Amino acid sequence: MGKGDCQTLFSDQGVIAHLWKDSKEVLILSRCHKDEMGTVERRQQAGTKINVPCPEAIKAYNGCMGGVDLSDEMSVI
Image (cartoon, rainbow, N blue to C red; front, side, top):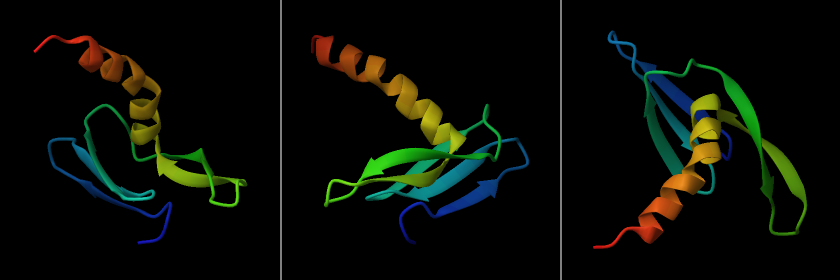
């Protein structure tokens, strides 16, 4: 798989599984997103920016993950 490639599987129960290639392979499961693609901006080694296609479920996760990461940092073990 090349950067931005995506493979999608659907279950009978309405679950969508996306396997998406960024710098590494990313697997995400969703019941609340449709099979729609968007784009994310990525910086290349030369410093230039390119738009890479990605599933909307991954865009939604990336938009909300900052709060989860902060919560994890502040949790006391």
